[in-house]
Image 1 (cartoon, rainbow, N blue to C red):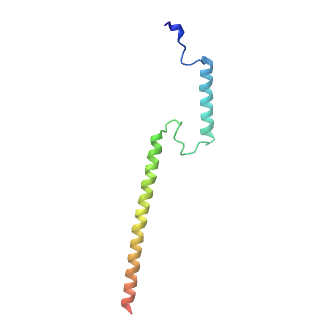
Image 2: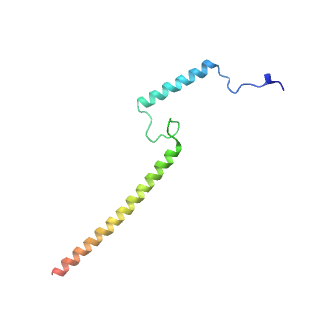
Length: 93
């Protein structure tokens, strides 16, 4: 087997590779400057990884659970206060 029988990994010319990088940079700048990417776009963005999506989802779930627990505590407290109020009112009569 001769080394001349192997093809390079990329068949693109150097010009095509540079052109592709320039096009990618311009496209990315356009998306960021015109705010075309949504805040929850976690893939294919510089400085943002998919683990950030998992972290954000976990935080949303935890916050929602805390809100439900908080709501239940307030509901029970309000029920208790109403019961106390009616007991006090009935003792006055």
